Length: 370
Image 1: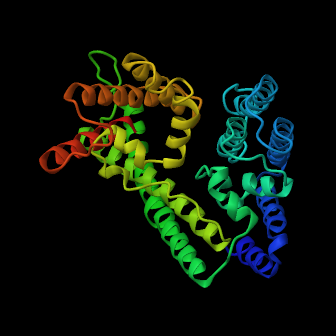
Image 2: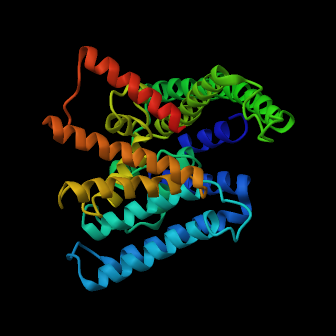
């Protein structure tokens, strides 16, 4: 904020339009290197490999999906997700490289879209490298689709209006993160420490079972859950707002990543509002690839559960994340079943007292899952 950003923006703004991508690419690599120099080679390898395989798929124009294209896609995805698996799930490595989940999903979306013919293959290595490594969202998202910034990678305008909007968005995100989320984190950690200490020191003599939570009680646990719920939202949405704000300073428009998710009246609506870039990625590249809702209701429910199971694993290699994903998957399937049972159409929103109770139930379910 006080060392890298001001000097980078100064250089970036005086750079001619045709060289801005090169400056942003180099600046992003410098930014990542300052954080984890030992893993920058993984980031660059991801760019190089997917650039080469994309060009091998379609040298000039889209030619249709053939056997050659499918093999190249599979090899590219095996590399992308193989590296992610090695560092995140295998236990072979002690440290997780910064942002690897985000830039893996981002580059995977690009190579899949090239295969599907949704976007033309990017012939410029610098433009593709800029897209993958762009420092505002590199570490924690949002996951930016190539087609959403494709035009701006070729030409973008930097105006005082964009700069004003970007700075305001950045400051709001920074306040969410520092003033609210970090304060809540201290409060949450204090409650957790009290609970853990009580669990270790107090025991029920007659049974020998530890009195879990004796230090804060039932009400204390609900306060802890609600505080943790708000901490997660303000931390993550704050970071997203900061990334969107800096992107505007650079001339890019990133899509909103959080849209008041705790106002949702159903679990389906919640996932349309929470971490939108991830939920849309899971929908477009996993749920639909599994068959979506095209193969009957039972298959649709199974696809939802499988998608959220894998979504849980994406968040971390732990049974807690698996359980969290499965609970959301079952809830999504149950909501789809209820919609079918009551004859309500997709996208229909509840109103009045029905919405009030829907928000109440969804809020507490999400809180319980957190």
